[in-house]
Image 1 (cartoon, rainbow, N blue to C red):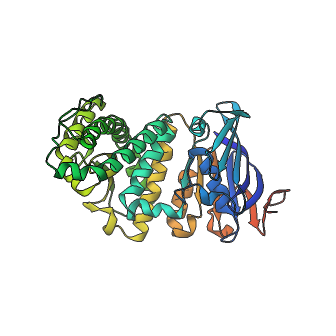
Image 2: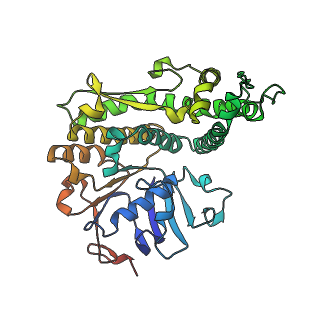
Image 3: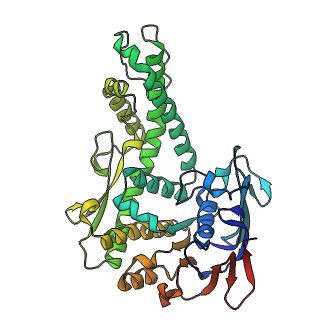
Length: 404
């Protein structure tokens, strides 16, 4: 898989830009603020419908514009597919494949797949659990695009149930409410002896357990598949450090993957049980305390947690190992994702630069950004573009992008 052509209109700092790309290594070199990261951010958005830098779409639209456009021509399994995304301000985004509209933007997921390394990846090790949950879910969607729908359904149920919890506290305090575990299908009907808020809450328990079990099952399988690749990659990047490991800690009471039930049906039943047990506490606090949104990916370095124990260099190596493991896992699934290395070499010492370069040099397509060309190891020699003064220029070639 590789991008043959990529263009943006009113995306970030670029009124317009078009890049002609090839398999192999492409290096974008420019000073900080020149716009090179904006371009590879666009590539990542085209693949995942999300940015690695911001959580909402609004900052992606150039100031003063009403929409941003991203277009790519993707060579995949011997055929060329055109993908277009329209990011709109104040109205839903739209997407096209080969110029034909699709019903939902997420229908384009899977056409282009990418794995992006960026300075923000340090938060995978040192940041909050939400960073690691997002990492898992983004990789799940990259492997199996159907999880985009599961993820969206779970988030919708969580928002509805959380809003209801804030209103259920008076009903519980009145003494009129009793808790009852709903059927796994989530089809529990409201009962006459329950206040409306609590009866409705039981129905949402079923929905949360159903969608949460599907998401949790996907994460569980993902961690099992990802861990050996991550351990191997870390050993190659940081051979003198203690080994690493990954595990999954869940709000259902499991402190590791081995403690989670083996089937989605069993996970749903367990979630229903835990929701019933936590009912009074949830209503009292007005928050949902059980579900995949409370879970974490445990990262271990040697015998202790990586967060707080790993040095700066080890934290970087761990984050890179997670991204390399993602690439190798997708590759094992017969998917060759586009690799994007956004200004990561400046953060690494010379030995880790060479190690990382050696590990990714064989990918079908690698896009690299750097402030100075000397930061890029010679193993990643390839096509070079100078980015600056509102232009992206192929060295020795024609101008390919311009800020108007």
